[in-house]
Length: 196
Image (cartoon, rainbow, N blue to C red; front, side):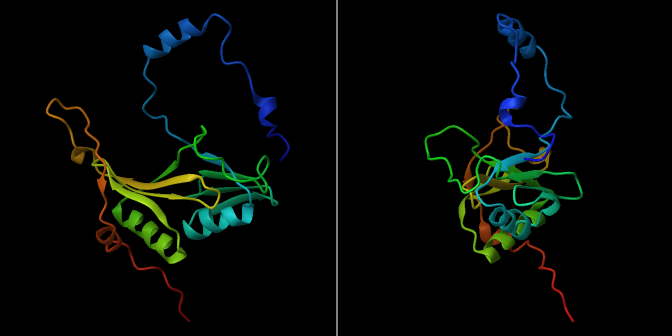
């Protein structure tokens, strides 16, 4: 493990003083989180770093920003320090957790528009990656799959907020309907080719 990152056990700290949990929960319910907060990155335990990179970097197209030998790699879209972290610190040669266990359901990667999501679908098809599902949620369109380590992955694009379905009283009304993959794929930009 790289110096300074510490083990999971070393980083654990108690969340609250004994007896104060009720007061803190009540205060937390009265305050909404700042709307500028977002998910910065996902860090995944993988069994084989090169195999994970072949998926996240080579198939999905994330850029490799930094690598710690055969133990960890950090990937990004657009030059950010990292959106995806991959490591073998506790999982080298390991197997995915069995069904029925708690843990990450999926990491969701949001694409800027429908053409970008269509390009992701094209990349998956060309790499022979099988989808677990594809859904139109009204607010978004999503592709569901697994990475080589069995981690759930959602690739999606949001529709503009003014197109989100709402109930008669204005509440958001998400749905799960089939996504037309042929129509989506038709919007994929042509793959870049290198010519001589």
